[in-house]
Image: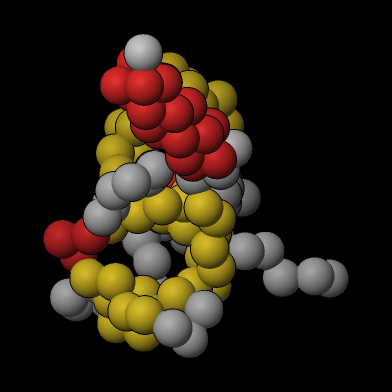
Length: 131
């Protein structure tokens, strides 16, 4: 019966340790980009993360996407096939490809989440400046 009791105690200890770990499934950190190429982020002045450790979201990368547009170009200011008064405009409508220039720059402050029990860190977004 004593052997069964020590097995039970060990199972309870293991469950307690797992419960404590589950109470903090992720850790949130704040960092600052110190290098763009290669990408390096200093986290709370304690450690430096490199590209191999980082997972970047779309909020912090340059990417292409499709957008819907419906606008007119500005006046050209010259008489290039335009009207008698020199006005020349074009209407642009439909879906167009656009590049979002959102890559991290040196000095950007970011919010980072560490995966539970992992060596990977997810760069969620930049920290917005107060107005």
